[in-house]
View 1 (cartoon, helix red, strand yellow):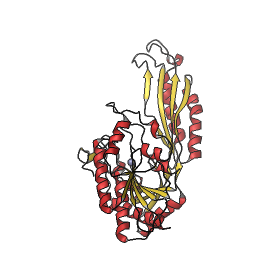
View 2 (cartoon, protein in one colour):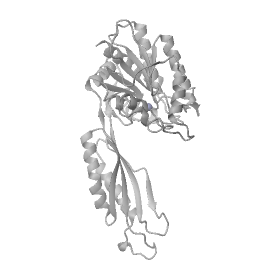
View 3 (cartoon, helix red, strand yellow):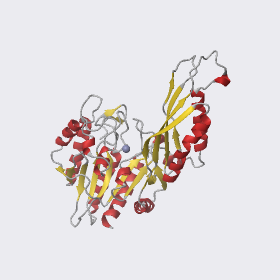
View 4 (spheres, protein in one colour):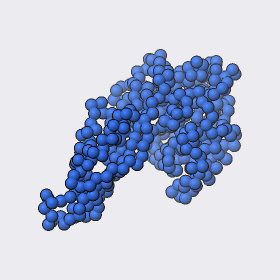
Amino acid sequence: MASIGACGLSGVNRQAFSDEDVQARKLLVKWASELGLRIFSDAIGNLFLRYEPKGSTGAPVLSGSHMDSQPCGGRFDGTYGVLAALEAVTALHASGAQLRRPVDVVCWSNEEGSRFAPGAMGSMVFTGTRSLEEFLDIRDRAGIYLRDALGQTLDAIPQAQRCPIGFSAYAYVEVHIEQGAVLEQAGKRIGVVTGIQGCRWFEVEVTGEARHAGTTPMRARKDALQSAVRMILALREHFADAQDHVRFTVGRFDTLPNSPNTVPEHVRFTIDLRHPEDAELARLAGSICSIAQTAGAPCGVTVRATFVCDPVQFRKRITQHVADAAGALGLEALHMPSGAFHDAMFLAAHCPTGMIFVPSARGISHHPDEYTASADLAAGARVLAEVLQKLATE
Ligand SMILES: [Zn+2]
């Protein structure tokens, strides 16, 4: 699979609804056909490969992830979750296990959002978070409409039966590389993912007075940049927590007039704030304005919220299955929240949902150097197979 859209020494460039994405889908469908799975696709191009042994009925257990990548991303992000689910289904098939309900390997469309923003389109449309119509007129940088690229992708897999958007599912389990270094540093092989941290974005505007850098005494200045620096330091100190759970990032910083010999009049900077717990994230977010205003005096300060994404807690029943499966296989596991967003974030509102992490070497992801040892990939797939069997038979 990694040879499709190969980029650099070991990366992939397989952006949503591209020729490479289509080739990857075709290969996946070929493997699924060899296993005798039934192939479905909905109108946003989510692919479902259904294992439906005799005696299984009703809503399926879903497992998968995405196969699109960043412009030069790694070979494991997303793709591992789809292929691990296919491996798990292959093992269920080989074992001849009696299942009460079908198991679908799912490949969600456009998780990365690097070609057509936003990301997680497939899972958002499936769960009714957003409608397909909202996305059809989005264009990529070459001016190509999503509706056309999606149409070509759907046409390329004629054997896929059309299924309705958002059919009911018994449960969803996604295995994914961690994309951080927590498991590696803890020396654990399996992450029992408890949920996905929430995120809030802010834009802070600092207004001072532009003055001559040579003639204006220090005590008479309203220097927007000096105020902004004090604010950022005060916020960083305020957000420091012993467990290191808070994520506080100032990633964009613009100053006006941006001249070496004028006292800065205007600064605008962004804040990206994340935490796994809803109440704590809200409390931290609520403190930004007063801290910024106090530290920013004598300049004027306004804080505007620009984006909110609430934390998601996965269902205890699913995390327990993951922990039990890891224990039964003798794999050391760690309960942890996910630092990154995943399709599972949206599925959590649709059906009982959980995730399994495997270690990422040095925490590198969205880069060709992304790497997970084969033994760890296999361990994650084995845990997934146990969990899927449990969910499909309970
Ligand atoms: Zn991913």
